[in-house]
Length: 341
Image 1 (cartoon, rainbow, N blue to C red):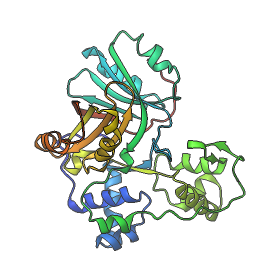
Image 2 (tube, rainbow, N blue to C red):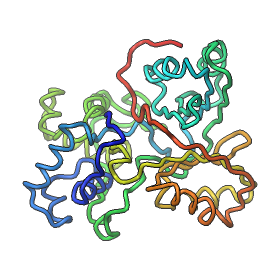
Image 3 (spheres, helix red, strand yellow):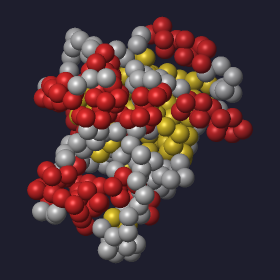
């Protein structure tokens, strides 16, 4: 999904459709039309146009929230590189399946990334590969300890509260299946994923809006079975969708990374306050001197200044570092293939 900064801001109708898909990535055109006051034909036409030119994609979220808010095993990486080697290092990181997020900041020599890893492990990327790369001048890593807000949970503020409630998918009651606990491979956070469910998740990975009929044809399973398993995955919180759209197209060209230090007795409240803020699309408690990380979208630098000077007041923050993103390189996993630094 590549767009230049000259791409126009989407119309309000298109922005509202994006926001509707944030509520439910598999939302039907009929339901969206009913809530948003449009015709189903208009919804289908606009969504087809947005998808055809790469403006909009709905994918299975590359990061899921553990049920207790903890981390399944991920690191924030802050990497400084020789200026002439930035593109080389970024390309090598982007090719890795275990790196779902990569941003370049306006400093021109700095990369922010998220790496999946086993909690407490000596990850080869951090302990061997990056430090031994001559183009890397410094490396900081912080373990994600607690999730307050994920990007997949951020909502573009162009719908009313009533519209968001009407559009949000109600989780159906889990249904009993022949594949009970212990019959499949351990899935995320201790929930077993049997081969059929994993096949469905894999098939949905590049396009989470594939209809049940298409999934049935692609996987070779009956459509009724596919529908039942999709309902189960949704009920268990394992089918989480994420809308990929360039924030500039939503009128939000400024993205800021915030590294904050908060005393322990303020950490939980400050993290939740950030998660509740409409601009914040990511908030995490982490290890390291900056024990609270956040990311937020803004319409302009004035709004960012207002956020820093007003909205963060009273949260107990003793230190803050702000980095502005110049380019979001990767926001979803690339197809698996070997890569090395």
